[in-house]
Length: 201
Image (tube, rainbow, N blue to C red; front, side, top):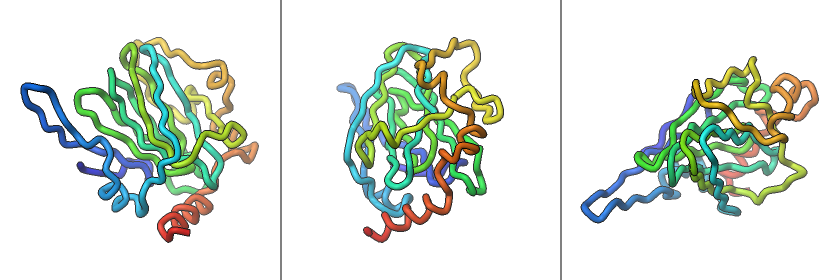
């Protein structure tokens, strides 16, 4: 398993090692030691989610209040998605930047994103099945969204694929509007929270 940091700091792409033979394949899609070494602390597992999406479905950009927010470890076990991480932390040196990783059932890579980052994905195939481990349980009152179609943010969604959004995601504010409303995570508060997790406090 190899872990590399993305263009958005505190988010990582994880490359797995697959052992293949005529029976199929075996891999460790999550192992805490290499991830904890890269991140600075183990992932606390509080909830596991699974979503199944038709091609073109966009889920996100979602995030949660810090603390505790919700760190996520994401992989695609059927089909393919383009997974997107956005730095929405006000005061971050890379505020407003994003990075994307293709997750599919061939390479079987994963993405880890720390608390306070924005997350979205688009299904590239029908029945794209995404599973993710979460550090906290879902809390509707703490969850927020940014429109994935924010022109200023400029996420490069796949061309030629009609995008399908939920009414909630369609109605989500732009990054600028969310910042003006004081709804975005603060970079210094996020870094302090990461430090508290590393210290075990």
